[in-house]
Length: 315
Ligand code: AMP
Ligand code: TRP
Image (cartoon, rainbow, N blue to C red; front, side):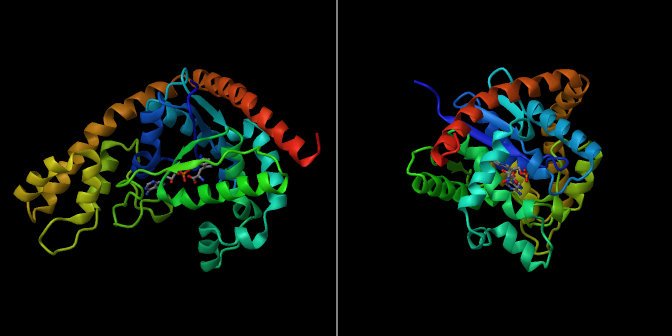
């Protein structure tokens, strides 16, 4: 029996943080043997933020390294750049044509930008259509993501149904999100959702100094009990049963608890960081993985795009 299909993506917009890792990327590595996997570097999605060629290049290489450093095995999974598979943008155009503006105006990302009176790009407005294409081109069954992407998967399902219904053809399969409870929204050092834009992150490949600085900056209240923001991050790295005795013993001693957390994070990150550094030393090996991944992704994507073209009557 052939395996079910898993696809996910990360935007090359800078360094990943432990929220990206526990919320999504860890699942990529954990599930790579159970599914036929496609892991994308969503460079065209990142173009809405990254508008400098050198930064884009560096960030793309960075996500490829991140994927490999967390243990994705390019022999087993397909790692590719979105821009290498032109079917994504072509299919997104078809979706644009069957989707209304009021429907897309209900997207959280759009509403948040509106609320902040930001002038958003057409690409940002359209973001969910490209993401729907990313997913639907591969007959994807599951999409491991953090909670913030849930609505995008719902839009993807709606779009698949709309297309199938409009053209009376069963072209697209409806995917399901895979959102892991407990890590769906990892909090940052201020207790809000961990996010690059809130400046509250602990980078996944942080140096020891960065780990110390960020943990020491975790916001604590002075209620005397358990420092919740410290604990919420600590439980990502150590079982809660083990933490119970530590937090009881060190009750109210926030500095000691932060130091314990620092040690746990350092022990976790050090081998990942070393692996990433080793991989970075051979850029041509990374390049070969992406070329190979693009070839594999293109086979599947172009077949599905042809189905869609036939359904709409251009082929
Ligand atoms: P991005 O870097 O925006 O492409 O995000 C990569 C993945 O990380 C997506 O699946 C997000 O849902 C997930 N993610 C981002 N921030 C968090 C967070 N604070 N907690 C859990 N998952 C997150
Ligand atoms: N929108 C996702 C994010 O911001 C990245 C992404 C792009 C993605 N295309 C995707 C995730 C397809 C899953 C599937 O994190």
